[in-house]
Length: 450
Image 1 (cartoon, rainbow, N blue to C red):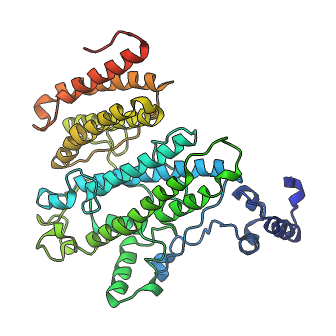
Image 2 (cartoon, rainbow, N blue to C red):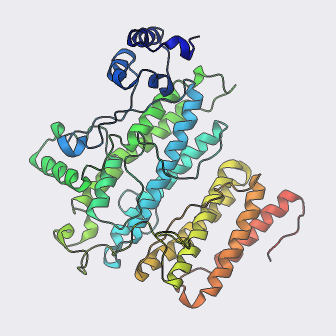
Image 3 (cartoon, rainbow, N blue to C red):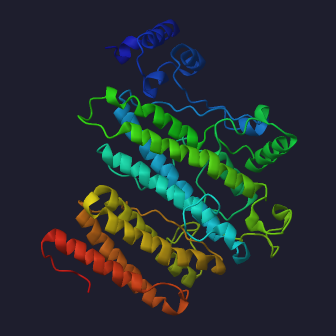
């Protein structure tokens, strides 16, 4: 086994080492490649076939209209460890896309409600696409659980992985600029190459997309990450991490469907919005040429990246709106904590998942539609203690129970300012179910709420 010292520092030694690993079909994690030095990056790529991070591709699409395939630096030689890493990254990406699409969806004005959607999973409206991203998030976490790993309900944070995230995370209202990023994120590998344009309309689309992106892109798409994960599935049996693997053929099929759903359905949907060709725009022509102050413009003028945290740079200032945003945060955190329990505890997964859906499609959705009328949006602030705050799933349910109590108390304080369709009874219904779950698990433990 070669040690770091045996790699050497001379270029000839590095090249000999890389040729040797390629000859013997060894897989090197990215840390070894750093030993080659910046001047040897292209030599290493040619001699090992290993994907390397290209630090100069950030503006290539804007300059040339090309969109080269993403390359991911491998962190682990063991395919099991690398699979866990990439699945967690995929979960973060799906979560980040989901909340960005939701923020954009709820920024849409009532006349364009068909464009925003109503909550069923589909690739024809914004909420439908966000729900499908939530389904992707669920699939990735179920695979993590089947591989013996913890679920990942966190999302992109800084510093984020530049070879995986197609753009920096931003909550922003629907606009042609935000849509350009969504088009890019969901695009198939070769869809945005200028040399693949099949018509003059394609050329115009790519030029407009490049202008809207303004060079703020990285050379990767979500589908490229899933492509790497699918390839890695074939390597898993080489690892001795588990004595028994899940049905890898079935998981390959599931992940290929997720990849195709994004690269086909989601890409075409966001492209139709970017080009203002979606039926949801009605008869309004040249809609993206309208001023944001025009009543016919499709979205409210909302702040980017608002926060419900007091003292945050982007804190929502109006006290009532801030309190409503904090209530929406509570429901967001409740949903994620319940999802985490559903992945960790198969025996209670169905009932807990139903509770998560009730809060997502009930109070959270109601508040998300109401806040833009007050000039704000759901902040989707991250929960600092994470979404598995308990030592066990049962302990997490106890903590969620306290969050429900907090949400119920805040909702009653805000009663005269709540939207009329806010479902106050969801609190007592959720508490009853949680008390039943905790009581059964503890063999008769007393409940805290009645």
